[in-house]
Length: 70
View (cartoon, helix red, strand yellow):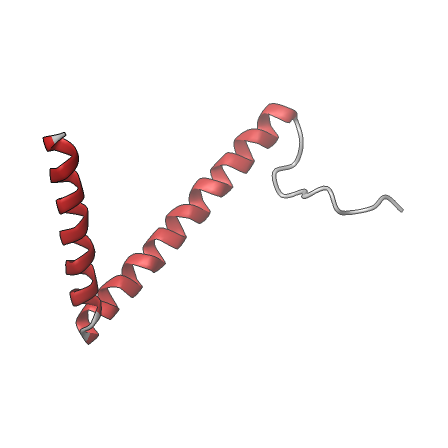
């Protein structure tokens, strides 16, 4: 029970700290850069997942299946 209380207090302090940091121009810039980095990381993970999935299926990783045959 003590660990749950400590975890809750830590989360609350982290949220308050992030809110205070985000209220400054430097903090907003920091969170903007962090968000951009996370978007780049997410895109790389998705691309890697799709490439590996296509490799296992034996298809082109850039083919989304929406093209029609002429």
